[in-house]
Length: 171
Length: 181
Image 1 (tube, rainbow over the protein chains, first blue to last red):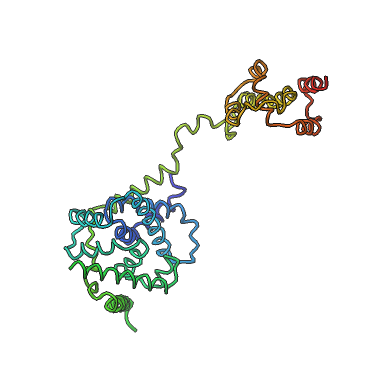
Image 2 (tube, chains in turn green, red):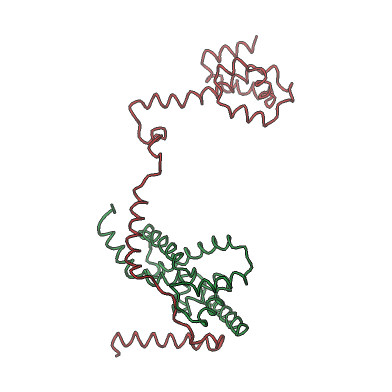
């Protein structure tokens, strides 16, 4: 079915190597396992399609991460369009969903942190996740997001400040 | 020289330290807490994911949309032995509409600018219908008035002048003669 068995074998290897970090990058943005599964599948299909166009100007992982990020942002845009309730109501619901999620085993503090991150605009949320959870350098982040390191530092700074404020208000 | 593995661990530790140090300045309460994601993944998820993605790729690449082959020949991709007949079937209504327009232009030139009754909606309706040449000939008075209300004498004369060589069909020649009478 594939153009060649080698192509399929190569793609299998790529999936095996990168699916887990891509999964987590997406999951931190969309939260539920079910949504992550959808977004990750779409991202992998795009990766397969556009792999011949990969120019090697950036590292492979950076390129893959960028596709995963774009897919997540597209998903969130679509989802946010459907959400009409207030932010507070949505946050409350989000906390409850997280607590009931069988694939989330964080304590109350972890839920509060997730809620705090959820108050951020998508781009800031992304920057915070990349730095805080993925421990990426600003250089790597700048390659993925095509944004200057200075702007990313500022964005991360704002994000961390807002999270700090949210958590201190809540406690 | 540090062995590669140790070097990697050292690099990771120093990177984490930098990130934590940075965080301690801007958001001390967030520092060092909950760095682990707390997200769990269902067992065997990645094994299933691989086959799900590969299945989707295979089906997307090779499945054609429903009805894809039904009118493929009309799109000129795979000519059939009787393709000429089919093309003729398509061309007949198109040509009849074109001929109708020309007929209206010549037949109704006397009535030009005489009628204000026809509006643009009527025009759209007129051309939206797939009328045949015969239908038009039987009932062309009102329609020609409406259509020709939008064209002036000068433009018809200019059109005839420019296209006289193209109007070789007997019908068209008759029409021109009729006009001159």
